[in-house]
Structures are given as structure tokens and as C-alpha cells.
Image (cartoon, helix red, strand yellow):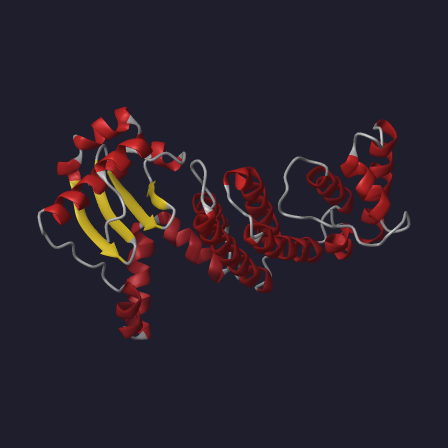
Length: 312
């Protein structure tokens, strides 16, 4: 596995972060690989965990330092990339990451309990997550926040992405939708509604950067719509607020995901459907049908005002 160069690292990080990363190569420890991923710890002002991913879209990096958490390819990512390249160029072996799942599977129940208690006593965030599960909440606040960060990282892009990258991105969207659906079926409708909405908004923001000539991203994002609509129906939230959100997204500039009032019929109910129609009429009255084609299309396709299919 290579997939990147020093010039590629400089392009991702920028000259300033690249030069600072050079100064951190001696602070890189525990370099390991697992498939297309590179892991290491970089000891700066405190230990930072770095994960580099080498895929068809090129190189991506995640670090839990403040600059990295803002979505930047930081100096710690540069340092890890440089150390990995150095070892490969000089024929030095990079160890495989330990198969932790196999190890945990080999432990009996008492050993697992002892291990988890040890971890919980040493890390308050782990303890809070375990307490949330013990209280019957499979997705506590800490878990939801962790998943929110992972969604942002997974759906983040930098610049134009080619056709192959579009398929990778579609697969990522599908995986997120499947994970959210499992949580929804576990009774976590409120958390899933918020997370699915976040994911849809990230896809919409980044869609302009993709070659989606086969429509793979648009099709995959429909799975997010399905899980979001089902979660909204399960939570019984304010249907008027949902109607406003739906109209805002439908009349916005984003091409994906494709939204239909039919998707949200159960969540909207009679009150929400009526509110949707009233709000759409107000918007229609304020705009010219000759220039506002989106409003025109919705008016023609809203139930009771023409055709029943509401996709556009």
C-alpha cells in the first residue's frame, strides 16, 4: 500500500502544516497498518491519535487534535504520512494492527467484565456510555455525539471527486443509512432523526463536487430519506415544523437527496399535510409561476392540487 507521496501530503496540508509536520516525525509512535488504513500516535502537547485512509479518492486523514477536528489535514497527519513513506522507501516493515475483535472474542464473560470495568474507571466518557446502555438507552448522548463526528468525517470531501470516487461516496452513504436504521429499530428515533438530517445536509452541501453521472449518490441518499422519515414518524415530533423543513429543503438549491411529501406522509399526519399545503400556497402567491419552477412543480404535484406524485 502506498497511494500517496510527499508532494501529495504537502498539497493536502499546505506548506505551513507540512513544514511543521516534518518537525514531528520523531514524535510518531505505534505506526500500524490495517488494509488501506494507517494508524499511529503523535506525541505533541498531548498524545494525538491519527488515522490515514488510502483509497481510490486518494489520501484522507483524521486526527483528534483541535485543528484536525475541524476537518483539516494537520501536521500530525503529515508526520505519520512521512514516517510511513520513509519506512516503505527503506524497506522497513510496518506492523499490522492487532486484530482486537478476535482477541476480545477469545475472552470469557468474566474477563470481559473485568476489562470493561477497568476501562470505565480510567475513562469517564466510557463510563457514561456504559451507564447509558445500562439505563436502557443504546444510544446515549456520548454515543450520539461520537456518531455525529463520524458522519461528518465520512461525508467530508476536498475538491472535485471523480466517477470512481462517487461510487465510493455512495457506498459510504449506504453504510451510514444502514447503521442509522439499526439504531431506529432499537427505538432511538429521536437520535436517528437528528443524525439522518445531518447526513442529508452534508451530502447536499458536497454534491456539487462529484461526478454523479450514473446517479449513484442520488439513489444512495434516498436511503437516508427513508430512515429519516421513519424516525420522524416514530418520534411524533411537531408536524408543522417538519412541514416547514421539508418545504425549505425542496425549494432550496440542493439536487440531492430527492424529497417528496409522500415520504413524510406518516410523520406529517393530517395537521402537517395541511400546514405544508398552506405554507406552499403562501410561497406560491409571493412568486411568479413563470420564474419559480420549483414552487410550480410542487403546486402541481401536491395531493389535492393535481397529480399525486411529488418528486421533482
